[in-house]
Amino acid sequence: MARIAVSRDLVLELAKAARLELTGEETDRYTQQLNVILDAFRELDEVSTGGVEPSYHPIEIEDKLREDVVEKWQWDPLANVVDSEGKYIRGPKIK
Amino acid sequence: MSTLDRVRALDDKYHFINTLAHGLDTENRGRLSGYTVSVKDNICVRGMESTAGSKILEGYIPPFDATVIAKCRAEGASILGKTTQDEFGFGTFNINTPYKRPLNPHDPWRSTGGSSGGAACLTAVADFPHLALSESTGGSISCPASWCGVVGVTPTYGRVSRWGLIDYANSLDKIGVMAKTVGEAGLLLEVISGPDRYDSTVLDAPVPCYSDLETVEGLRIGVPEEYFGEGVDPMVEAKVWAAIKGLESDGAEVSDVSLPHTKYSLSSYYIIAMAEASTNLAKFSGLRYGLQEPIESDFNQYFSRVRTKGLGDEAKRRVMLGTFTRMAGYRDAYYLKALKVRTKVIEDFKLAFKGVDVLAAPAMPVVAPRFDEIEQLEPIQHYMMDVLTVAPNLAGIPMVSVPCGEAHGMPVGLHLMADHLEEHKLLKAAWEVEQ
Image 1 (tube, each protein chain N blue to C red):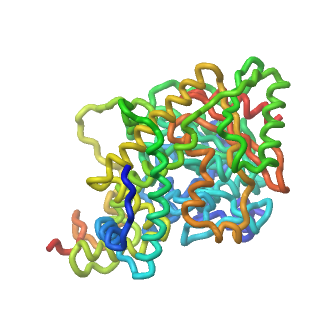
Image 2: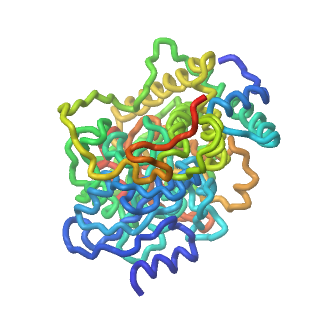
Image 3: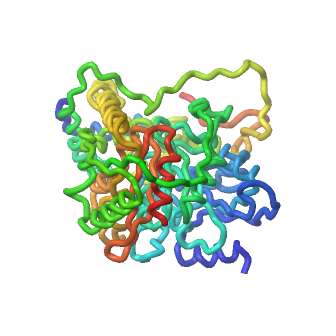
């Protein structure tokens, strides 16, 4: 992997994508830390992985399907919602 | 003094409980009758606040029991409460949380280890019948079990249902157990293992008897050279070797093995775990559970405000790193590369298990560090502390940390690892060490 120098702008872009707000001090700190950590990850370049399949799971997972029948939960999925109206959750406006 | 009062008194001293039960079930039935079971805070218990150690889930009261809880209740266990942990499991010292930081029962100036620190601490100090449900993604059972001097079992990936677990990294998370003795850990593992119609990743393999522990005679034990030497405290190493020699004199056959990709497992693990965590944590948006604020502004501003307030420093760092390694342009070089290295790590273990039944190594390279030592560490140094536990977690193989003596006056854990679904071999060897 090519060496990546993480800039403040990239950290702010990551934070925006992850819906996080950062102060100036946090941006500086994370920029420094992400550079150190991502640089350490580059050691994986030393491993030859040509023709190697990726392992998304540690073991083989087979698809399991159940009968397509309606089941009713025995509990209220909206039990923890603070702001609801009937069966609906009240949310912020979508621009 | 009632058990709950006793727990309150112990908790005042060691800080291991986030939420305590209002009362205990005294019904006498099943294999866990008479036992209290504590639950790591990331496993949902009906009617009991379950925060996974995060401010963003403050006030979340699950309206249902996780499958492991339902199985324990069906066998007569009484749920004691929720134990402290690092936020979502993001940590090795149980210090990354806005809630309580547990103190090591052997020295209160030292860490219990993480992320299941509360579970290990309570297991060590409980002077009443108690078993702990905990969880590991990269070593969160073995680490605190080793540092607090208790037995910690991380089962095969897919052995135990995760329905009702507040997830960290789906391809790595395993619910496991802690107990004072190997026999009790085996008992709880037996109860919680096996298929679950609500979790399609659970293996259908039958559950053997984990609490019937026989001799280790003829058991082939491999000692991986990469788990000793540089970075491992010589006094820790000496205790681990003494335990291995003890197993040999009890009839086990000991030989050297090599796991050549061990060195790379740390980077592979952190890339995969952070990538998965960054997608898992996207669901915490302050609308359906936990921290919720007055609805103002547009949805991007609202979600950002709630997440900024509710997620801690380490969670933010991991979410950003995970977002980066999945980004277009970097995904192949980081995330996909890490998954391919994981294949190599798994192949190392599979090859080793052709010649041996169980691998033996130190669980942690050092004894529990002091809090003032931890404060000096950079995030990358925190991650490096997991160097001996991440490889078996990447491979999803079962492992147990069993106490094998003390170094510098603190407990040392012998780490035993076996091939997928061979927990019974591990437990036999661990039981022999315990004798």
